[in-house]
Length: 198
Image (tube, rainbow, N blue to C red):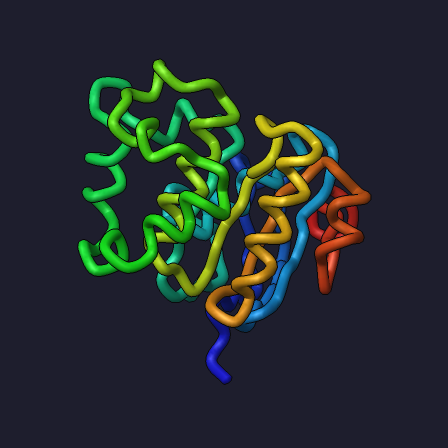
C-alpha cells in the first residue's frame, strides 16, 4: 500500500541552531488518524505548513497524495468578498457538488442558504462547518485538520468528528489538537511535538 503521506527524515527550524524537527519520519495510510499535540509554539502548525509546501524543509522528503486542509480560524481560509458557494466551486468538481453537496449539508447541519452568503455574514461555527464541507467535497486522500472543531460547541464537535471518522475508507486524517481527550478518542497514534521530535 502506498502511503497517502510519507515524511522521511524531515529536518526543519526557522534557524539552524534551534530545530523544531530533526530526522522526523511519519507515514499515514488511508484509514489512519494521527494526532499532533503539544504546547502553543511547539511547531504543530509548522508541520502542516511543511506538508502543504508553504515552508521548505532543511532536509528530508515529504510525499503526499491529494490533500485538503481545515484551519483553526475559518475566516482566514475564505476570501472575504466572495460567496461561500463560489469559493467551493473554485476547488471542487461539479460532479461532487451535484452528487454529494446535499448529503454533506445534512450531515454537517448547514442550511444551504448559508452558501450564498459572504464569510463575514456567518458565525465562526457556521463558517467552520462550511470549511469542513469544502474539504470533504474536494475528495482528498489526506485531510489536514488544524484544531478543526475549536469554533464549534461540544455537541457539534462530537458530531463533526464522528462524521470525519466515518469516511476513513476514503482518506487519512492528520489532526492538530489541544484536546488530549479528543486525541485519545479518535487517534491510532499520538505524537507530542516538542519532546522527541525537536
